[in-house]
Length: 290
Length: 290
Image 1 (tube, chains in turn yellow, cyan):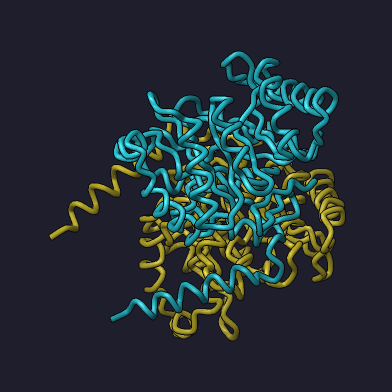
Image 2: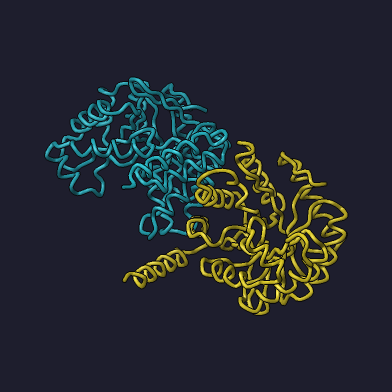
């Protein structure tokens, strides 16, 4: 199953026969105090650096979240979408919990955006899915209900089915326009919690063939050695069917692990991309040697 | 299912509810010209360094292969087994294609050894399985026939069933004493070849619950960035049921990836081992700062 995203000039395809889709998580003020202050003052200049760093390491889509309390989030998100589209041709994932902000971002977006996100709650689907349809976008859907995150794969599968059925039957979307987030939570909270995510991914892949994405940095929250945990989590999730992630696209260790997994899963035939990236690093290292 | 290995004083359990069993590959003259020359001259001193390096990074079992042409391999293997058992309490994997060498190693081994390896060939099973039974050892079994490596998971499953049935019904071994090698081959040879290994691992785990091991360094043969490929391959294989590997136990990147996968799979409750290893590295770094 293929989910197509695009900017004005570039298309990205997400699918289980494609290289893993790396969605850069960086343009997000959560936990970034300085960036929050800049956004409150209407200063978007940090975004240019964030775009450049993520593009340089291999981001294929960029998530944009402008969720700063006490600001006009729709206006900020509209400006940010326009700014990012002016400096890169990567497709964008428009990320907000505020419906008006999603609408503002979509209204100025050129191409086929990804919307982040809906849940299995009827009111959230009713507010957002018609908009996704109207703007011909795709959407990330979390299989949880009333802010409660199900701890069993069974329940996540039931809510996934509810979302897919509702999106298709009631709002006229195609299954390939819904990207399920199987819910990856911190391993430090419960030793079995990542196994539940892997089981959920495996079963959604087998039963629906739907594309999936996760907020990949969550799993290592509170642990030391976060980059190694994140670089290990993603290939494991890819093995059972994960096709994209909203992730740290600036850390070579993590991006390289994803590229190695692409190679091992047969999504980089004869290692063409792997070998080319290796050569490019050698050239860069040589160039930086005094 | 639990496979127990032991030395005179230490037991190691392999199983899908256990931390991954890291079998150090280093004590092997293949591709090591200097070591080959030393072994031809009867000089085993390099082994002490190889043991120390593997133990330091986290090996849990040590493979010993003394396959040098034009030597008395049984005599060398007997000496090497005694030497290694005199300097470490880790269990040993006695590795040879020569039946007499396996017998020589087993005859002096103290504890419960792992024997590497048999295939699905009747004559190889007839020569080795009675010896494995006699010495109360466990054995690695490759599901291939007459030197031909099957390229389809189906065929590997058929040969796995043949091996397990023969070992149990004809030679009186227990299923837990057979560790299947699902056959990991170089990704550079065929873009789908690692997928076949993953499918084989998944199906053997589901259908027989048997423990498995692979020669993990093979997959990256001929590619640049081998350590990253190896560090990515193992967590992926663990996700579908691999429980041990004969692997590079001296490279921190690879061992840390396995430990991160243990954490994510719930085999390191609350991250106790992960956090302890992180603290030990911090202490070591501090101590080495001038």
